[in-house]
Image 1 (spheres, one colour):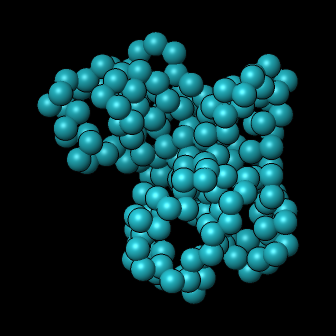
Image 2 (spheres, rainbow, N blue to C red):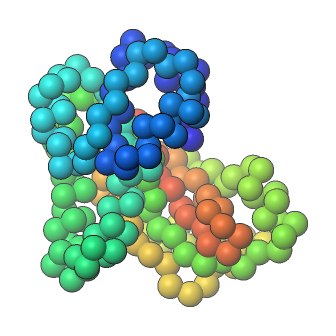
Length: 195
């Protein structure tokens, strides 16, 4: 999702990912990034160490924070208390990163939809993007879906526990992303600069 031209604007890049395939895939997708240093680690587990090691670095969580709920449930950590602890940890990131430039692109909610093949082509070429000067609740995002005549959300939608990653009054964008023809995500993204 990241443009190579944007990445080349940084004097140094430190990429952190737990997946052993990520390094090769990232380098294949973004050839020519000579300023790239790769670290295989769990970025959230190692966040304090990374912040101490790179005190002037801007931080970007690219499609990572919204995956934490899925990882937790997959690993059997899905009790109400465990998911509440995860949500609290994600909402605490803004305090841990205070004074830094940082951003995130993450899943907010996801679920099943019905859409014609023709309408799917339109949305996949030109995603639905909404800019907001504040937090929009999951219910508000679902109301937006209800206004679309072409897109019929149905069934149970998953809350990715990222509602409080940003301060409630921080500007952000929401992108309706067609993950698959019948399963879509509302993504949330913002860039935070120190005040």
